[in-house]
Length: 341
Picture (cartoon, rainbow, N blue to C red):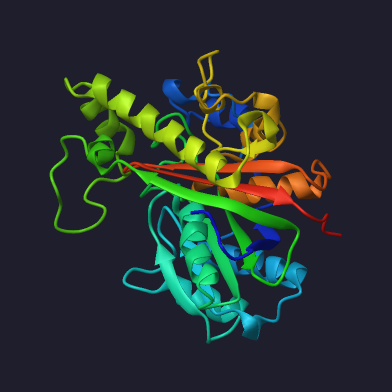
């Protein structure tokens, strides 16, 4: 989406638990299977005090809203993205987060496209902002991957789940960065990679813990798998190319990139290699490998970390990129226009 109205990132917010469980300790405790021991993670953010995911989102949102200078009553839209259970069944977590963070007036929706939900929500919010329906929007994410229903250490291919909440404020009234483009590319024929050969159930948690990796392996063994990997690659590159083209930016113009905190390890080619980026341009070394895959929150937490570290300067262009199973690729290019205090 090439935006006809200036849309700004007004603030970021992150809530992470104090606890970091070292991977070495988790391996020694017998928690990590062989396939997940050498992915490159050093530690994982683990929330053990019982804080609900939605309260993590509220904390991150209040931080972002406070930093933005936008009054809570001036928010017209709130989108909340998550991957896992939010605290109650048959409930509206987005309404809770919106009410606690900015008040009762914001239109509140939950977005569920797995790890692409956060940037997908930015894409949706940008449409609201572009057409003038709202002037300020809040996007949040949150997850806590508690067992036994889910196994944070082994349930997802090439990733270990980390806990935390994130937030981003979008505004047409100014901010620290301009949203140059936002893009979503989907190939829904690839949804079988997370379904495998598993039959549909009549209710949740028919298998505990949830066997996501097992389903992936089921489909990987089918004759269609090789050709579908080419489809996946094409979608990854299409999202990158469209986001750069609509932003009027070349690949070499990018200063930094925030990619999913997912890693193959063992010297294998990584997502940044496919995208034509270096690992140094990403936040994997200084941040991602120390907190784990935060579901839909990686792009917001990673950008917040770059700002906190003073790693960006006015004029820098940054790529935010997410991959959500299904498969949905979401990308955004931003340009730093001011450095937040």
